[in-house]
Amino acid sequence: MAGTERPQKHSPSTPYLDEARLRQIMELLFFGYRDFTGDADALLTEYGFGRAHHRVIYFVGAHPGITVSELLQILKITKQSLSRVLGQLIDEGFISQRSDAADRRRRQMRLTPKGTELERRLIECQSLRIENACREAGEDAVEGFRSVLKRFINEEDRERVNNGPAEGYGSGETLGVVGKGK
Image 1: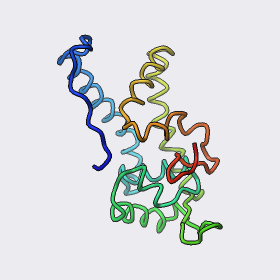
Image 2: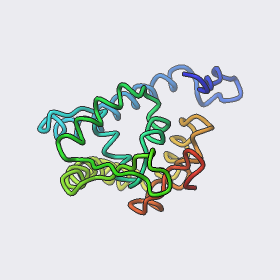
Image 3: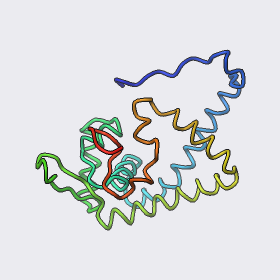
Image 4: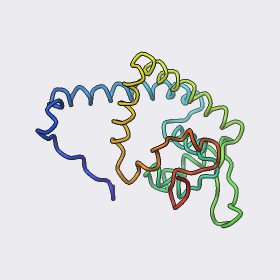
């Protein structure tokens, strides 16, 4: 993908990250992601949805009024891929669209009550896993984990998530794409 910087190769200046440790971290990420998404996947299956639907529901819910252009920038997918998923979510009554008052060509998206309920259920099942893991690991470990995760994100996208969606959640703020938000 254009604009995506490549991670630097393993450096002798990080002796605590030998190949065995790096492979273990990779494996932890694979298994952690599998189980984290698996909780939501089971729920999505009940609706005939997949992970792409989940991502759209998440970002539309976290940033009411987000536009298709902004969503495309965040998800880094093609317009065709988004169109299929978004069309299904709109047709089935999970997302609504309306014209932007300032620019009628821009379509703003919001979750409907039905979409908000699905988002709540998805967040609930994944939040439980996060809360349990964080409680077991402790506050210092959680802050260290957050710091590492932020550095997984390409530098040009980090500002979008520096404060997390919690600050602007539900306020209509966007993730700082197209000159908006934080």
